[in-house]
Image (cartoon, rainbow, N blue to C red; front, side, top):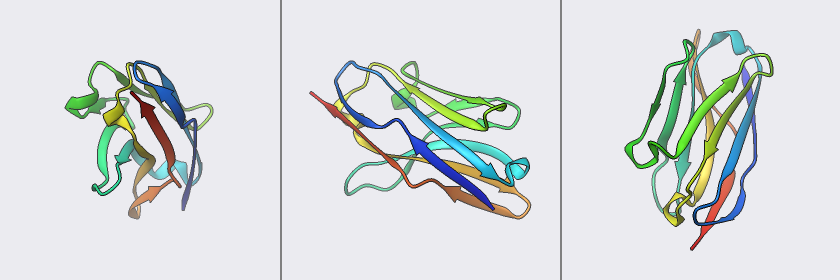
Length: 117
């Protein structure tokens, strides 16, 4: 199993920045990709950014140029640097890890990000 613990959410004004972190533990050798998802009230959980084991990153169009996903393998930590935040970025952000054997999606507990206008 893989355990994920997120931190770094909070309240910020529009235009501000936050950095989310997600510490992974357990069978991290089985992880093939990690990502950040957002879930706004009344909406489905949506992918924000994804980074593969090889380091390739992909972003949803709404955050391109503003958010950066990265990881520190020495610390088993995934990050999401969020700049130029907008009120529509307000959501609970979840860390996700996809493993290959067995194939499974693991989720963190979520961290609230609120952007005031």
